[in-house]
Length: 193
Image 1: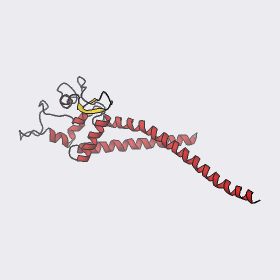
Image 2: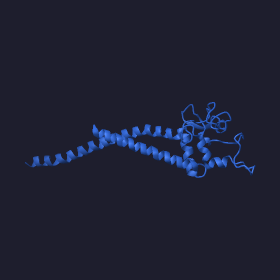
Image 3: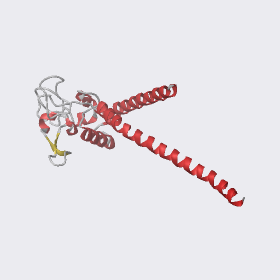
Image 4: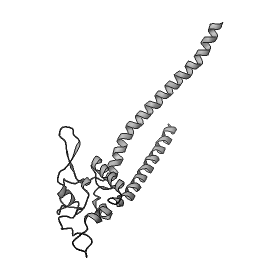
């Protein structure tokens, strides 16, 4: 049993280390959203697939620090001001990938059609414009870090089980091959006598 405890603590440390590295990578890459095309595509794909928004739960304000936010909300008509007023209907708090997509009733998979993109990106009564207020059902509230950790933990159990089964199969195969090699010379000696 002590060896199992060592394995368990080692696995726990590895998982914690992986989560820390993942959080650091997400925190480092999000400000590049809208500036670096591969980063933007990666975030859009992740948010669309995992149905999440930003890094942490209710973390929409993280997008105010991105290049996308600056480019999207720049007032091109007013040279004196740099960002649109929050009350402007063209002001966007989050990218479209943070918006809830409709589910295909036949396949059960998300479609590319948004529930209400305008309300998702700019709703004057609550999120994402304000951290509190009435619930906005067109916007993902869950952060991608927690969602990604849950997704990886769910699928890592399956991968771990497959790896254990494969290791068991390899050990059995190895034992059968070794015993077969050892038994063959003994049979040959018996035939000679």
